[in-house]
Amino acid sequence: MKRNIVIAFLIGILGGVVTTQVHAQVDPHFSQYYIYPMGLNPGLTGAMDGDYRVSAIYRSQWGNVSSPYSTVGVSADMTTGSNLNLGVNIFNQKAGNGGYNYLNGYFTLAYTGVKFGPEGYQRLAFGLQGGLLSRRFDPAKFQFGEQWMPGTGYSPGTPSGETFERSSSSVFDAGFGIAYYDGTPDKPVSAFGGVSAFHLTQPKDPFLKDGQKGTLPIRYSAHLGVRIAMTDAVSLVPNGIYTVQGNSQEKMLGAYLQMMVNENADLMLGGNWRMQDAISPFVGVYIKGMTIGLSYDTNISKLGKSANNVNSFELSLSFVGKRHNSIRTDYFKCPRF
Image: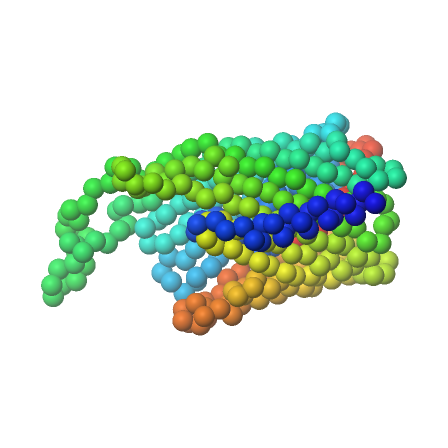
């Protein structure tokens, strides 16, 4: 009964977020969003089938332009002997000819002491993260109208006539998340989900002139999924996410099959559908705690067609380990991507 209430609570929040009206997406996104857990939800810190985890993901998009977007995310988290889990995550995005760089680095603390169910295997986790948000660009890489000469074209040595008060900024930033997961051993159907909010401090835009207003919009996310053990060797993991930031939103649905190859290795096949944007097939291999994943976004939007069907790809790597003499018995069978 309590579990049904929790799931209904999460679905209700998801529906509430979907109807929220807010103003432009700034944060990068990943198709393999579960491989970068603390970037999805701080409450997922330490939610794993092990004692520690290290993850990395690389995304490249708009590869047919001269300076494509590239995003790197790296995270590490661990459990402790109490109801606290610790983590750190960093992501960096480089974009455009102006050398724009968007860097975030956070420390995360999650509390997992809310337990319920017959044997207390079902959990609510509350995560809080804080750290540095840094933005900068390189004015030397810009081309201005004053630098274009009739008959000769662009002349980099010609003064642009432009001045900038600043080209970099670093400010404090914070986020919060709530995650639900079921760690009951050998259970055929295990649900997981959560909600999160990032940029709660709403940092001001550092590059606007005095008198102009602009803040970084809060990014709200809700995610849901379930692991279904179809046989002893095959599991199906349907999942979905809804994100809204400013006047931009992202809705993604997907699923993958995890099939046992032998006692130490699994094969994963699946994909995601980012509504009104892209289809992203996925293939992954799990070997002794290490997961390697590859996905490829095939653009199906009008923008993709007008931009010569530009696509994106992601490569991910995650390792989950167990400490020597670990006595943990409440492992969460986490999604592999």
